[in-house]
Image 1 (cartoon, rainbow, N blue to C red):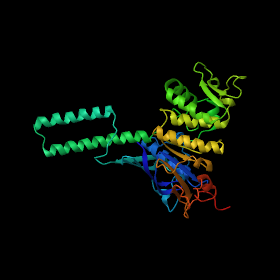
Image 2 (cartoon, rainbow, N blue to C red; image 1 turned 60 degrees about the horizontal axis):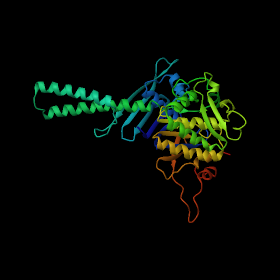
Image 3 (cartoon, one colour; image 1 turned 90 degrees about the vertical axis):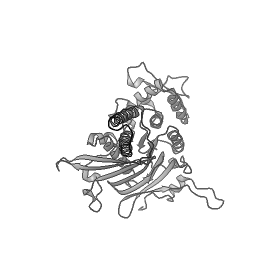
Image 4 (cartoon, helix red, strand yellow; image 1 turned 180 degrees about the horizontal axis):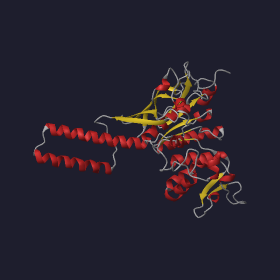
Amino acid sequence: MSAKRIHIKNFKSVVDLSLELAPVNVFIGENGSGKSNILEALAFAAAAAANKVDNEFLVSRGIRVTEPRFMRSAFGGSEERAVSIEVEDDRGIQMEFEITTSGENSYPKWSSTSRITSSESTPLPLSPEVWSEFSEQLNAMLQENNKSAPVLTDVHRSAIREAVHRFLSSAAKQYNEARLADFIIYSPETTALRTFEKEGQILPLGVRGEGLLKLLRVMASEDEAAWSALQHNLELLDWLSGIDIDHNSSLLEQSLRIRDRFIGATLPPFDQRSANEGFLYLLFFFALILSKTTPRFFAIENVDTSLNPKACSELMRRLSSLIIEHEKQVLLTTHNPSILDGLNLHDEKQRLFVVSRNKNGHTVARRVTPPRPIGDELPIRLSEAFVRGLLGGIPQNF
């Protein structure tokens, strides 16, 4: 399942917003424009899909939880309305979630309702277990029918078609909600990446990067292709000659071995405590994309953290390629113009959105189309267009 369209209503600064998504989606905009609110709305829908809208679960998904009145829009009395989030996948199946508060005024709790809309012709990638259950139910219906009428009538056929559609719709709902329920907003932090001290509440990776060591161990021992791809992509760091996992060590800080090609002949490998922040973030990003155990649909806040501008461009180019290759879908936010130069907006699978606040303060988003050259001039780089204000998304009050 890939989210093709999202429609958000009444969540924080988002009053009414629709977006057509691709596998790779990058969001730029001023501080406070609502980029994170768009991501959090999807995480809110994911929590509703998992039927877990308690505050602890919301925090573990990367949502900045506060009082319910601050999580609903406060424009034009909308604070009394429910949060509404609709997600349509690439097969035309729509999941709609309404999230509101219940309970006492002093300690309100979030609650949600959901429904799914699909057509009878929608193809569904159902598991063998689902088909087996369906076959058993269908056989039971046919046997019961044969007791009363040896020949199927139009009424019987219609009843069977309706039963089939109800069953497949129910199975589709479970399938899609399970995929959406994995959505998480990652905001990795240096401390979590450097210490490897604990795992997060959400496995295999927590929102701050908790659990990275265990994920690397699994990749190194169980997924040779992913581990090789991780090593290859880390080569964008000129000084790195490779990393190893010490599977026999009982000490966490001794489990990651990093080799520097400039000092390899004189000193042994060092661990993550001595590594620079840029290396740690690259390690996290590539492991997140390449692992088969991480979510297929997620977001990353500030993907440019601690990286050189040119490294940002190359990182974005590699991430885009890996996201598409491994059939994942990712939403990214950035404030670094260099990230944009790693995007190929001529590829429909890569999209750039400028997020801003309109005259009423509502969050709006506009998709950026590929730049067109004027006459014989070369097209301007996206980073330059961003800095010069040609794309929007930069402050105008100073």
